[in-house]
Length: 321
Image (cartoon, rainbow, N blue to C red; front, side):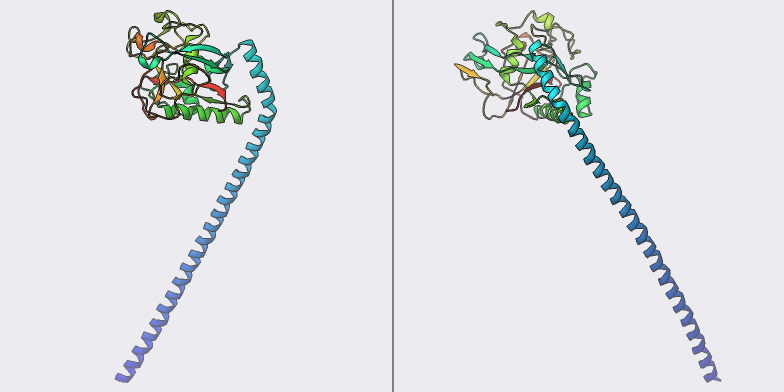
């Protein structure tokens, strides 16, 4: 009897084992099938993604090539128009940005002042090649058109962009150069950059030799009349060369490292070969008349990464150095 029971038990266990084994085999098979299906789906998704990326790459390259073809066709027209406008003394508007540049004829002037600070001497006779300079300080709307953001403390599309460092201003110029070059709208051999200190003072003076290029209250927003804020660009009287806000509103970054003047006669000076602070000029909404003088220089705070709500800029278009 026990033997029969044992045999039956063994048989039952064997049957159960076969059943469990079959279940495990089926489970493994289903898992493998599921994994394979997922691998197939993943492979298809990867292939589709790679195909899409390749199509986008090809389309992008085709677009760039087409833009280069168009730019190459436009470039001669751009160069001809630049020469015509310079000869005629006509302004140049940067398409889609709103920056307007004024042609500045080359010439010679006395840089510095015998009645100012010691760093404004020795007065140096400077000769400059022609260049272009923005009619106004860069506005917040113009900054956003190129950079896509607005760092300013005082908000308003036509207010000058401020709270920008020298590095920030140069990045704006770099992006504007790249943008216009790709479109064939940048005259050959030129870039957008900051004006040199010599270019800035020459343009600020606009042929004058005194402390200011005209009556300061009519030309500048400064501590006396600003209302403790920046003001819309171009609302004060322009100087004789059609440039607004060279005095006041916001300080304007220049290209140079701050350093002593050489004296004597120089041509197209680029400032000190190295340094720790960059030049900024023109005064601001929060400082007095003395700081807005054409020759005034400041030897503090001009670290390349320094930002303040009194610091802005205007770009120049000059020959590639």
